[in-house]
Length: 109
Image 1 (cartoon, one colour):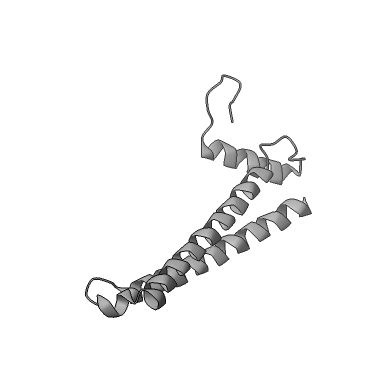
Image 2: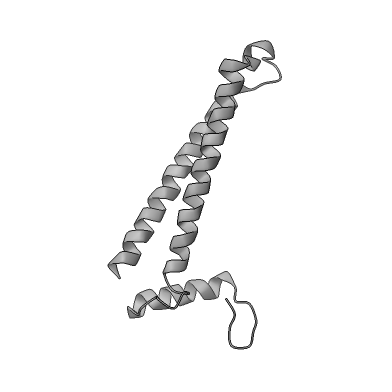
């Protein structure tokens, strides 16, 4: 987003624009209102789900198909990979919840 002088605005000015749009109950159809963070949250939610699914598939592949955890117990820390997959899905759930709440906030305006 560029201002009148042509300089690129930072994240804080975008946040102020969004806050002013929400505070004054103006239409955010100009493209730099409250809908910009909504698109970011939706993209983050989709990419987070893809990352968590890929991590889970690799963990299942290494543990059940190749038996790397049984063959190389010192080199492979399978417990940590399982924990990281669980945390990735929890992260995906939090981002998705945030995206849904942002969607309903935008719709309610």
